[in-house]
Structures are given as C-alpha cells and as structure tokens.
Length: 113
Length: 111
Image (cartoon, rainbow over all chains, first blue to last red):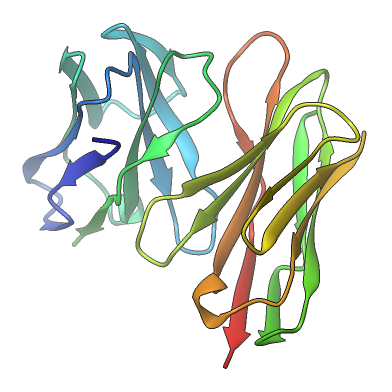
C-alpha cells in the first residue's frame, strides 16, 4: 500500500464552524506533513511531525491545530477560519524527516464561507 | 536567500512536439533537487531526485538533468496524458529539511 488517504475530499464550512481533516498512511513512514496550496501556487509547508512529535510549525495561525494520534494518522483541526484560508490542504508522508521522497495524498479542497 | 524559479509558466505543445522545462535555483548547499507532477485537484506525484551536477534520470518520456545552477525536465514526444503541472523543489544540505518549491510549469499537450 503506497497511498496517503485524505478525508474528506471536499469541505465547505462557515467561519464559526469547527471541522477536522484526516490523513492516513500505512507505509510505515515516520514523518508526516501538512501543506496548504492556493490555486496556481506551489504547496506551502504548515507542519511537520516526526515520530509523532511536532517538529516544524511554520508560524501557522492557531486556528489551525495539528494532531498526530499515532504513526499512521494525522489530523488538522480547524476553528474560526477566514475566507482566505480556502485552499487545497495536502497531507504528505516520508520514511523519515530527512528522507527526500514525499508521498502526497489527493488533498482536501476547503472552502470557507 | 534560497529561491527556485521555473520557466515557462505555461506551455502548450502538440502531441509529439518535444520540449524542455527549466528550473533555476539558488540554495546554500544543495541536498537534492526534486521533480513532481501534479494533476488538477490532486497532490503532487514524485518523479525524480537529482543530487549532483551532471546527474541524469529518465522515466518513460521524461528525462531530468542537473547543473550547478539549474535543472531541465526534457519531454520527448509528449502525449496528452502528460498534461499536468510540473513542480521543481530543492532541499538544503543542512538545517531545515523544508522543501523550497518553484511555482511550476503548467503543461498542456494537444492531440
């Protein structure tokens, strides 16, 4: 199994809602990542987890809260988002944090109204 | 400052019309240069890693090359299914393991 699975594929939420994005991989990878991608722009790193511990936080606003319950799962909790947070949210994993090859999921297309 | 610039921004080719995409980079110590392909609404898919100047890698109709300042992705006799955005990224040899992505080249191959 060489897949990174993200759910949901699409999400529409209001600015007062609380929602969560989920990511799962069963490749034994110990590093997992959240990226944000706007249309026609490259992915922007948000968070990196290495061995289930938060390793990198790219100064992301606190309305985004990551969680890594175990080595296969990664969540992104969303609260009080702004319309400008609408984007494609991508999860990725790699064998280790220093391992070059990233495996990306198909993403969650988020719209904030 | 580390920087990755891709050109052209967009490219339209006829099926069978070979061409090259460029990725120019500035980084303090290169750990590796990476090419990804991204289809609309999907996550990037890994294509190649290049580590040192002079290195080349091939996969089907794609060939990636690396010099000290830039990388090329050559597409030979492209097919419509090669249409996608091609992203280039670099990683430093030390410090953060963060990827620095270019803005991509949107390739459209017409039948």
